[in-house]
Length: 124
Picture 1: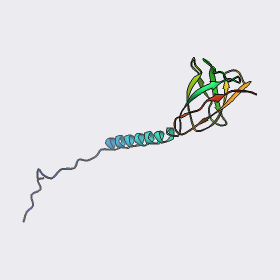
Picture 2: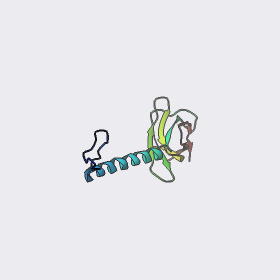
Picture 3: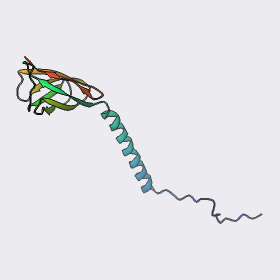
Picture 4: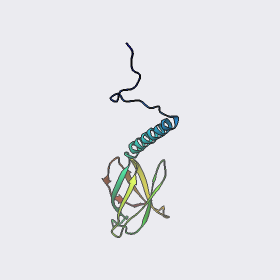
């Protein structure tokens, strides 16, 4: 019995995978993994919003504040005309000062989900 070496149309033929296409596939897979890891890391931070109050319990409109954590980078945010703010923070406790004025101080907390928290400034 002699076998015919011609491929039949119903049997798919495999093509060789070149080194270039292997590199492209590996690059795409690596980028996809990096993207997923970045999403997981950024999922720990979220927005905190509320109002800023001065020591006399009055809202503080149109002022820039700095929220500094014990570690990491300080974050600046600004209140609107009614004293409302919204800032993106990693979880933790932050000390808040009006920009350029260390005589007033407040505290805010960052959470892993969106939260609302007012800041009550006090004199040091």
